[in-house]
Length: 255
Length: 202
Image 1 (cartoon, chains in turn purple, blue):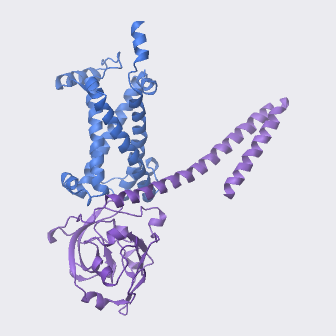
Image 2: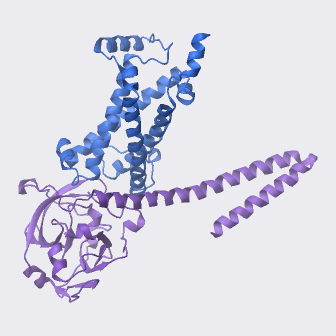
Image 3: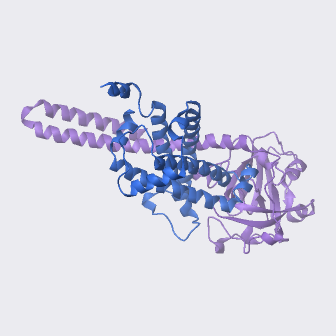
């Protein structure tokens, strides 16, 4: 707002100066220069505001694309699964920090629940492991374009949400992580049968680099939508955004 | 005189064709340049595109450009093809097309003897090029849908022989369009009247 006003004032001043100068015959050359200067400053000012409005336009189209993807998302359509022989080894490590900075999580870890959930009791890793387990071999697709096939095991997320009495009519499920990462997903994807609260990778306890103690695995979404080292899960009707999403990655991030 | 009168009443390129041509040009240039930036985030081959000729600043920005321009590209493309079919332009402009005539026109073109007296008629090389680039753009849409939403389009996914292969198909279809565009621009430079007809219709 301030910028815009200052810019407007500047433009008016320049135009005023220029027209004054043009009014005096002896200063025609100066007038010409002032006018071209004014024109230049207007052009550059225009460029700045345009850049801003282009960014806004792209952001609003990205919000429109969230809606388009929600429409396109078929809650019964399963992602392709693969035989064990096709698993990518080693499965690539990927985060917004180096592998040496992966958070270390100790044994007294608990998972917190908040928001529109009836039973907000904390969950220990042992309690989670005691729940019925399932596994999947699916393709992880990164927003950068590369993909890798891996085997994840754990609790069906829809089972977990129902068990803790989450309000599944709410719009969003949010995640806060031990590495300060955060993200959120739509309820439809949260309830998808392949959305898995994973506790294992390749039948072993989830290694630190893949998200110990747990990662939410969704083969229907791009990699950055799959949070690791989850410490808190919450259900909400306001969009909690996300680490990358707030910087411009598409929020829905479906695949 | 008479023929001049006919020319002024009936444009070589109808208005809808000129409009869809330029909207398509804008959409394709945005998609190609932002696509190069997206490619650079995880190159398929052993090279990257020069940052200066890419669009978006960073991966997130490039993706925003790519998935904004896709709507213009797709909606405009549907209009173009529908109007071509319904208006009978495909039949009038592109039929007949045959290999013999194509080879003959290529020979003529390489010798610099291919006539462009009548801009209302496409030669065989033009016919093939315009149809093939349309096909390449359709392949870009189909492979792009797989790269964008591989889970939601299982039939297209198997048609493209998997996600990773869809990226390769997407790349080569892009390469074909870029090569077409380069030759297209050279041709326009050689026969500048064609640029005028694409603006004014005559």
